[in-house]
Length: 478
Image (cartoon, rainbow, N blue to C red):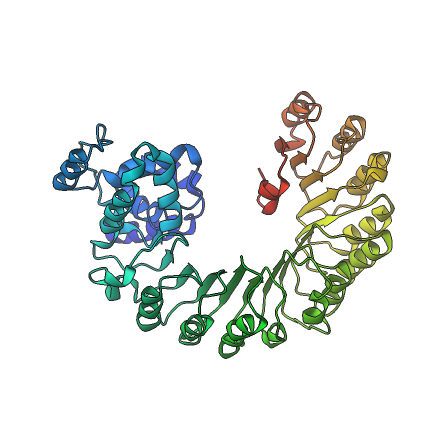
């Protein structure tokens, strides 16, 4: 019975693995909970890591150092072990399945910059800590500017033979690349940073082709000056996996028709397309199973055509940084509500003249749960009343998550917002976030009243001067 209870609890906590807050709240309940939850939390300790906790995490990791290693550091004038004399209760590192060297090295650079000339030594010791165990990593992030020499690590074949996720640069050490190609054939997710035109795309292509089943691919292009042949080689390496790839992201328009071969694609992310050449790769593109679309700086006509060629499965559409006129924007909104009956989350720019189309969208998309409204046109100044009336009268019953991204020199009209709250009774409490490029009048006093009345559940009001770094990049609500 005890074994059964433990297994049941493990299954429950596994379901909560991305809900760190709930896991932490259960951690101290009893010994069994602690022994189950600690390995789950340490599977990927870098996930959702807050800046204020980075050095604390690093301290726990370095507490695993042997006395010999600590003494060696002290002999070099490095002494950051004053609080780490106590042996850790668990071998935390042995639970780790994600080796995120990008985060680890960033934390070291920030936390121990006073030992600048010894940073390389510290990093090597840390790699040894993680690789000197009987671990089988599933995820690895390889830093761009650090020669890790992973191919020289003892037991590296065992450590990485089950690798499912790889983040690396095309400028990766050649020996490490050849080693990855030989050892890893089970990679399902590839996050490739494309830089340095002198790097050889052929070996990267062979690594991709050698995988058994690639599901998710990201091409993040740093150096767009590489030749078309360079990108053609990389894109053609995906042909073998065309039927299995379900998620694809690229920050440069493809030079081939590779997108049209992804017949089972569910998620597409197009980022940083600045010119009309993108129309060539999206022209007549049909992705009937597409569920998630994220686009930034993509021509609006191309997006409209793409959405018109979907098959009704789209549930999430996030579009921003799109230059447009009022006619093209209306066509885009129409394409969304005519082709996305199952839409749950939408991030889109709205103009003064789009209120009628917004109303149509709310009426037609009855599964909508979250709405991000981007406003970057001054003509919206006198239109808050109409906007909130439409949201109040036409929002489907499941829509209660709202974000307003104000890329303009004014903020939300308080009277209009108050009217909206006053008429939201008998509906689910609102989750609200307002992000503005100017310092706006505080809404805290107004919001507190409606939180007390149960009209607003959660609220966040932020001033940002760099919207690309804001939490609007995600659909999570504060």
